[in-house]
Image (cartoon, rainbow, N blue to C red; front, side, top):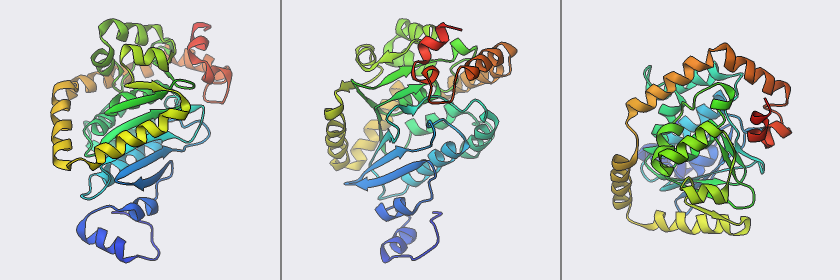
Length: 301
């Protein structure tokens, strides 16, 4: 475990010797874009990567580190992912830093697993149960991170989900095709991916993309109760049930790799570069109308 230097408490020494991870270990871990708090075996992991929580190499490195840390015995039983930004969960990748985060992703699974799709697959298969709380906007690879979690709960007041890739001339290469067909069915997957329109929480719940949509004041208490309930059950039974549900419901790894390859091909195409350039001129990757209402912005290109 790579912990920051400084005073080492008895509890941390015990963790190092026993290869476990306690609340202090998470607190001292040098995550740059994720804030963590362990309560009753539930790790609350809050994404905090200003200015917009874009996916970049720092976030990818932190997600890899978080997954490494939660593999330790005695660590978190449930991980709840949410955002510190009230407007954005993860809007999409930082399109200016695709080579950098791809290089970092390669350190997670080897030379054949250099994509976000492979990293998200690792999230789906993680030792703890993973729950995403959506209180803002999740689009593109940000939405694909949601699908990779074991469960998703959304704010009826503020949540927005969208697959924006086709409208920008790209392809959703981090799991949207595979996951949405399984979550919502073929027809709904077609509409979400080809239409590139934003879904509010009510519609996302209706088609099965999120488990439940709740008003803001009910969302966190509901997730807290569920997470602590699961964390209190016998770990071996929870882990076995998750493993077998994954065996029945996750897409083959080979299909995820194929989709990643299609993304890489279209990312080098001039037509996608032109459309992304036009969106950047309109305020893409800024706290602008384009990012807040991306579905409408795509329709105006």
